[in-house]
Length: 504
Image 1 (tube, helix red, strand yellow):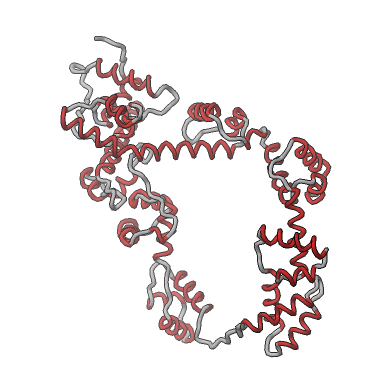
Image 2 (cartoon, rainbow, N blue to C red):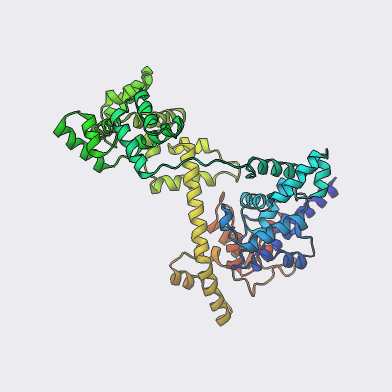
């Protein structure tokens, strides 16, 4: 039993070392112009299969920025060609997990790869193929037999769907185009609408319009009338001010006002009503208004009546505030969820998240502790993580350049000087550097082991990554100027497999 456990531990340790080596090699072969790594070269150097290397790749410790191409127009022709050849030649039948590996191979997010592959391999039916398949169907051939004659990629179901889609948009049958409305006809119908359109009764308008346009259908006249009545869709402030002045001059003579501003009487009345509502509407909610709304919610009063009782809020404004209050009460959170995040809240959020393991974060408990909704905490934490990653990506090239220049000049790196030059902290510089030439190996041997180096590494980890913060071994490797895999292995040994008290 002990031998089996020891073998399992050795296998796990070997896989972890391989994962680190694969991730490092992928970072070294990363081509910024192509936006991806040379995985064929990584597979040759590791002496493994391509898919095996992709499975060992660890994106959590990789410094390669993953691309996001959510729109097919964002894809280059080379990327599309590489994606299609990778799916057909390297993976064959693609499962859900293999789509993740394809995303790693392309260095593009998995959903974007799936979307682009579906669009680019979508079967297109030509008119000649459609006629030939129709002839085969009339002869009694089944879809399985037709697919053997026309093996469009994917499956027989794709061929059948493409055929039926083409059938729906078949342009072989002659179609009659609707008669267009001329400017003169539009002006005449507009005059009829302004004169005879009455809310709830358009019989007289239709009768007179059909007399004026005998060659047009009732549907065509109705559609054009609705188009005229509904314009303009957006009521501007200038239009509301103009209607308000006309009401002061003519009273509520909507027919005359509509004629003045070239709209229907009903539209003119709607513009004036909206103007009156906006005159009294305020954007911010006072405590008195919130109390009235809470009472309306408690009594089951509709939002139209709530708007009338409050007096300074529209029906839709009351509805959205009602939903906000209900969510806050359901999550047992304070109105603080609507206030901006301050530095104390952000620091508290980061501390609480750091106390959990990755994938086991209790957002409900964190939200109650801070006094915000779960959604607000998740969104803020994601924003902080993205800002941190983007900041490191922006500084990585500059830091690596300065490190390379110092190392080539003096065979050592002054991290304090680099941090001062780039206006960063030393830890940020250590985490951002990707220049690794000249790093030494650190292999444990009882007779040659240096406790000075061990104490130096453990002190750095304790000072910069106290528990429960995860250790950034890129920074440890740069600080010690030792390969990352050796740092990981030595830290594992020092944590439990040997006593690392100072024996010097």
